[in-house]
Length: 511
Length: 76
Picture 1 (cartoon, rainbow over the protein chains, first blue to last red):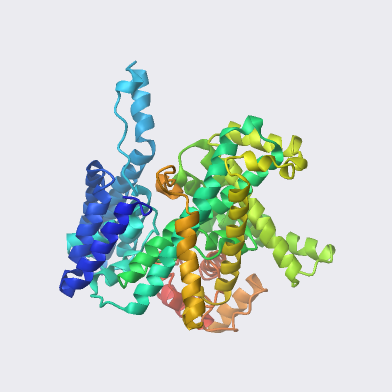
Picture 2 (picture 1 turned 60 degrees about the vertical axis):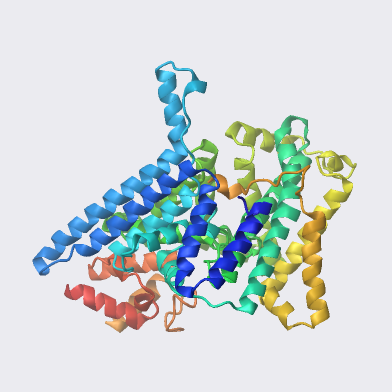
């Protein structure tokens, strides 16, 4: 029951009806039931993993809270016990995540060792959304351990936080303290929230069905046939794949966020116009925000301020100077964070290299900031001008495109082939000789994609200044309705769906 | 204590005006990299360990908040 399937619309409509028509105190039960139905629609065999993870996190948090020191001398002992529970439960959750990530590979490796027929060996069950819910639960456990959060006593309430269906497939990686209180409150139907939520969903469907799935046809075709493509076609497809991924992922977030708004709930924002970023670091503060914040709070910070890292930094400072000492504080934790970020996406080598690539960019920009500042001064670049800002945005976009080339072909060898073609077989003329219309998108669809990307850019520019839905709500009634009807009909008419198409699965569901 | 902390931070991070705001974190003046740098500088200078629990906006939003935290951890 993907967000793009007809069955989802029927399900969503029924859920909203039950949610608002039944007594308000039943709302959380309606949501829990609906979320379980939604999750089970992807396969009942996936549910036990989620139940197990939720059970572990719920029990461990309660256990940690029950360990209370009786006096000052027992405080250290209690902390030790709490740490044991945290580490034990955390290890189990990580094991579950590892099973989903590398389970099939491990089973097949054993099968090969035992010389069993690969086809007869069962595959690991893909526990849907495991990367998102395990991270949410690990964060919850850490917050309870550090006293920043109270443990939930009701298991079913905790299960609802874990399985709440709009965010289970692709996030956001919700914080318990952000979402759980909202799930406990009762919500009255609000016409304005209903309209705003529905409009956000429409915008999400536009991004997903009209832009992302249209571009996906070209991108998949080009990267499936690298050997017959020119470098120019490959670079164009890589640029389109960057926009495709953004529209796919942020479109899903808009649908999830919009539906939540209809229910009177708010999800954490996961995107903030990342393509307007002027540096790699800023890009990652605007792209997949909840993953970045999770790594910042639960990996980067504890590592960077650990006495061991501070001791190393102090030693380096004494021997090599203050700047080198500071650099240690940046390089060590950020290296760990970026390798883990790569592994979170996939355990394939190309994602490890992708993580190292982003980590290197961010670390270098930070460590060599004084030199870069001197260089811009030496070159007499006025960093206050609009043209410099635009250059920085374009540069950041192409840094992202390079990252896409590292992952889209699927293997490092494939990525190397793409880079080779771009650098040594570019053939810029192939962009203008009409051959781009033979890459799965005909002339009309190709131009439509470009127009829609322009619309996306224009709306994003407006959103940077003031929310577009608010602007439209304040505009005159004719223009307002015309705009929303245009959006609705553009999805109906130009959306990539229907009997001859199958809407592509959301990309981030695979992670 | 407040003067000591301010002097240390100004020498470590000359580009940042720590007196400009009482909401250094909320206003985006301090990012996570700067916060870890501040923690390292305070830990080394005052010979304290700043635990994760202390990394809250209240402690990092102003020099006064940082000074209070250092004072508290020095007394432990």
